[in-house]
Length: 422
Image 1 (cartoon, rainbow, N blue to C red):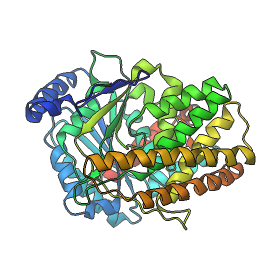
Image 2 (image 1 turned 180 degrees about the vertical axis):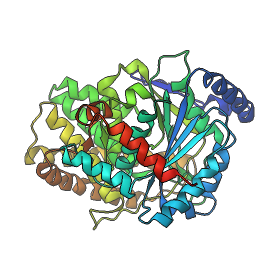
Image 3 (image 1 turned 135 degrees about the horizontal axis):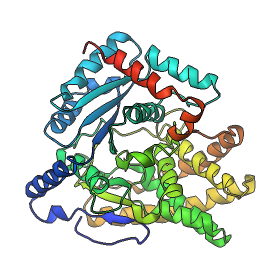
Image 4 (image 1 turned 90 degrees about the vertical axis):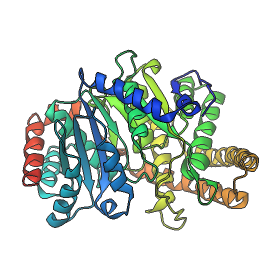
């Protein structure tokens, strides 16, 4: 994107390279990162489902691209969905294609008996470890990386990115690996336009998170709750808060709690907000366009698709409000639903105008219907939040080691034994 607007709260790193020669930019970028890697260790965390190794072309391309870089020193794959040993071995052998000189690769078998034993030990000590899912997989894999004590910067991205290339990876890592700035956390953002359908994607962000956070910021302003207003203004600053791509310093990663549900991304932004000054936080334009799998609305199934995602995200925000001194009741939720709905409809009008001017397809009626469903999902989130007093965050590893001082040794042993023979 060729604009250079700064929101003023955090640093936005734009895609100015797109105005010139992207290949020259990539060459200079990778040269810088290789120099940085002489003085610090860069690790890559890849959350992946077992089924994703069978998606033709997508993960193969990701591995091919990663194999061309020379600045990553270790790669940890958080493997979920592999229920049987033969599935794990298949996935382990698949990801071991990333192995090369001076690059350590480990696949963390989250569903395997050794890691499950560790989860049980932690539960026995009354340490919540959440439920199976991306958040739990990321959390246990971070624990393994901390246990090895060989990483200074950690980058994380999903394994279903159709438009993945080395430029995305390098840009994701550079802000936090660069010793010439003091950034400790960097979130990726990007356009999501379907090249085949010629329409905007990213409904959860566009139609729920953006107007929901906007509505909450306005409500907190009107009620003079300036602490919460600033919090929601911060979230509104991010151009793609639900992006699964970010990088951070290991010392920060050790200190943050990890949400185990679909609130993972917004929870991480909140943890960063609570632990860093804003000048240490950035977002970066990663690529020209981003394509990955899309979720169904699942309006009648609270356990699937965008329905579950929106409920989990709304639930996190509602719990955050309550935990920061503001009570919530049914009247507040009713008001919030109406405020969100009216705010979201103004966003739909803007998306419609944007699409019209860019010659994109836009079904305004369907978008408004989706907003109507999202409004109702807020009530579901409130019902769940009232019943789940503990929230959905797994404690930080800095906290866990106080109760389980041998956990790092146990993790290293479990992962090493699972990865033997590959």
